[in-house]
Each structure stands twice: as C-alpha cells, then as structure tokens.
Length: 407
Ligand SMILES: [Zn+2]
Image (cartoon, rainbow, N blue to C red; front, side):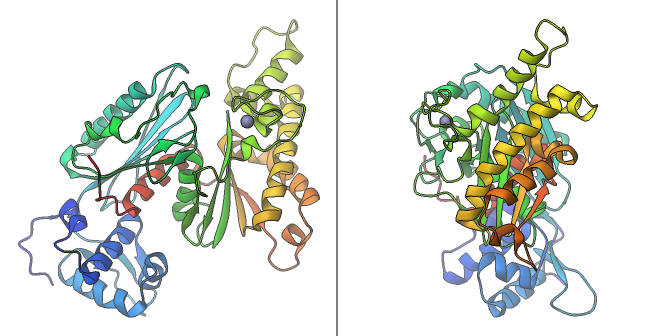
C-alpha cells in the first residue's frame, strides 16, 4: 500500500511540511486534525472547514503515503481515519493555583499518561514552568519516546492571557506572577524548536471537553470550572471564544454583591468572593471552630465530607452551587449554549450539587434557555475531570499552526 521503506514517519517533519502552497497548508491542517483525534472524513471536513472533496483527495494521498490508516468496513462516510506509523508525542500542561498536571500522548495512541505535582502557593512562575517541563520530559521518557519527538507543547494557566502574545492581560498579583513578558520564553529553553502555546486553563479545559469529553457533538458549549477560582470557557463550532484580551469567560469576577468583600482582582463582591474555594473553606471552618479539631484544609476534603453526610459542608457547597447557578444563568441568557459542562471540585460532586445548580440556572435564565420543549440546554458534569485542562492544552497545542515560533 505504501512506497515507504518501513521506518516510522517523523511527525515533526510532517507538520513542518515542504512548502507553503495552499495544498500543503491544507494537508497539514488535515494531519493536525487526525493527530488530535481519529475522525471520519465528514468530521475532518467539519473540523478543518475544508471541502469534502479536498479532504477526500488528501486522505487518499496520505493513506497511500502511510501517514493515515483508514478503517475498513461498509460505507465511505462512516470510516474513521487514524494516524498510521507516525512517530511523535504531544504535551499538555495545566498550571493551576497550587498544582501542575501534565498529560503526554503518543500521537499513534489514544491513551494519555498523566502526572501531577503540588506546589506551594508562593512558588514563582519560572520555577513552576521549569518543574512542569521536567515532569513532562520524565513522562515522555516513561512512554518510550524522546524529547526530539515532541511536536507541540500546550500550556494552560489560571489567569487571563492574550493569546496573540502569551502575555498576561493584567499582572496577576494573586498568583505572584509579576511577569509582563512572553510566558513562552520560560519553556523555549526546555523544548528547543518546539511550538509552544499558552492560554487560559478554563479555555483549554473547555476545549478538552469539546474534543474528548462531555462537549463532544455540541456546536456551542460552555464549560465552567468551579474550584479555588471560578472560570469558564466558551467553545463555538470548535473555536474558543476569548474576546479581545483573552478575558472572555472570567465569570469568577462577575459582580454578585456590589458592596461585598474585596476580591483578589481588586473589585468588590465578585462571584469568587461568595462561592470560590477560599470562601467555602472559611465558612466550614468558622462553623466548626471551637467544636471540632479536624477542620478541612482543602476543597476536596469539604466535598468528601459533604458526600459522607456532613450537614455543614453540604449546606455551604449547596449555597455556593446556587450562587454559581445564578451567575451561569446570566451567561446562558447572553450566549444560549447547547450544553453547559461543569468541572472542578463542583463537577466532582455532581451527584450532590448538579440539581441545585440546574434549579438555580432554570430559575434565573430567560425561560427559553432551559424550558424550551424539545432541546433545552443541558447541564452535565465534566467527563474528563481534573485532566480536562491538560487534555485541552495538548489538543490545542496540536491544533495551532504554531510553527511560526518567535525566538
Ligand atoms: Zn474579582
């Protein structure tokens, strides 16, 4: 079937291509699409926005060259296109407030390898990135690959970032990230000659759920991560909606109480000050102060206790879910998404909290959104859980034609 010598093809060379003719650019788009996920030709056309005829011709050629392997079976349209004998590995990194999660995937495999590490809250950004790079390289070695096979690195961070420049939109003093420069510079030394993209973690988690998780097969999808911080990402027909400064989706900073507490962003009464992780912990600890010694110190622990019937933890989490539902209702009235995917610790407590959240959203949106008869907006728990950000970062790193890397 192929004119090849039998040695695996090099993914990096395939993505670099040999020319910038329209045909070659389209070919690379199609290869990227299949590297992200095996798809039917219809799926590739939808993802790349290329015509079915262009996709069909390119897939036939790439199959001939051994780049693609097409499933056998009845009906052209339903057959999925997989990557052939191609060597390469993609890396996704999610740097959170106190944790880093790494996902790496051999491009010819479906399964991801994960690794997480916890940080102290005061660790400088350069150290976090360096540690993330070290973990990623260890993981690449563990799956039998080498660093020179890494085709792309995607990184999600818990702050608004300008996607064009990879600079923080505002200096994020709450992260201790007082950097004004291009965040990719922290990784260029670690991954020479590899395209690196940096985006907001909620945007990338949204993208992860859209490609691999609960947002599959939905044209418009809103993802919310309710954790220490509260963030959201909107995906519209495969595109992440970021707005002009990368701030779109920062629902944690919607004003809920005009005269409320001062938030880490400098405003007052933001959603995070009412329903964020710190406020949840504070309320639980205050209620038990002087009565119990085993006060929870993490949001995970509050969720565990609520699940085992602790009435204080339950009440505090339910109230938080109700308030987040109120904020999401406003977002749904504005954007009318097809589905809302709930992640973070709140998504992990879906059995307990999803109905409370749904009811609050139903109550505060314009009736058409949730009470339309045939196809109301659905609210579901994340399928990818804590891995959503790293998976989305990995997919988005592959998606972007980031070979125009600046030194
Ligand atoms: Zn705020």
